[in-house]
Image (tube, rainbow, N blue to C red; front, top):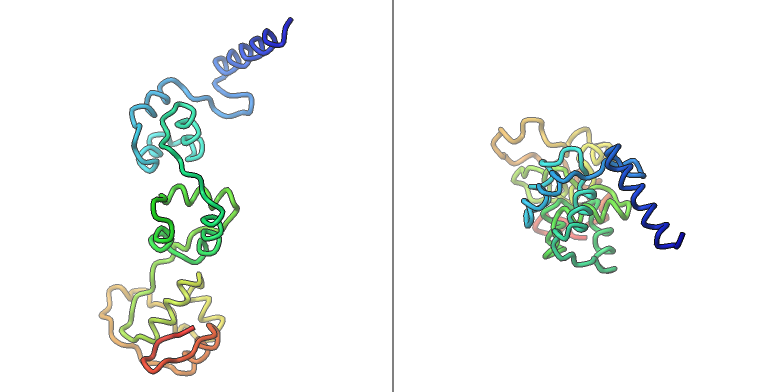
Length: 203
């Protein structure tokens, strides 16, 4: 038996096993013709639209299958500079901020790259609500940009909840909060910042 005949025989056995069990040799559920037809019908759609149609499939599995079927869009490989930039900002930036650094890149592609490189999740905390005092708001925003929760900032500065957003703050009028200069100075020291004349943080 020639090598070509052996390979054909092996391929036939694998195909027969998949048809009989519905699973590949690696234990993954095989793609069905109906699923392939559904992928073809959604050609050109974003992965966020396609994913709900395949509840038992992962994003990586869907993208790999689309690639195999010739349905995937042309993928521009990430450069080393982009990977370094993502590593620098992924843990401390929100999605809108992060996408600003990567024009032409989608959220899904950045999320997959971060997962493959073992990077932390994107900062999903909401932007702190402003209290109409530049200094107080700037400190809270600086903590958010650095990926530090306001509770963690309070614990670090022993500020007794001073920098924590009120539970129902979104329903309250934004009145200026009284400034506690002891806690503010601790925050300035923590962020290694100095106070300008216009009451803003400067690194």
